Amino acid sequence: MSNLTIIFQYQGNNISVQCKSNEVLSDLYKRFGNKVGRNPNELKFYFNSVEVPPCNKTLENLNLQNFYTFNVVENNVTGA
Image 1 (cartoon, one colour):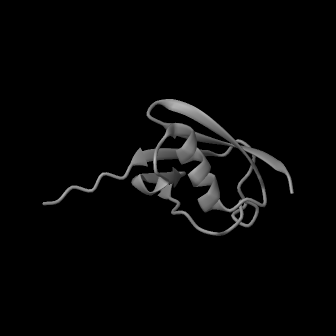
Image 2: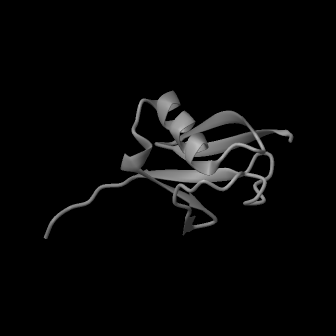
């Protein structure tokens, strides 16, 4: 188990979240949401332009490294 810093780019800001490699991804998203005052279910998370939905896999299992950066956008759903 190691300490990691994951960076989230959200609304033009880089927001870092400290975590452990054995933390699950959905918990990391919740901690980010608490930090910015948003429900993580209202956000979409992307890594290398690919959406990464919340899951119960650990950061280590997902092979996330220190200082990996997620882009975060609003999950705006509009009706036609």
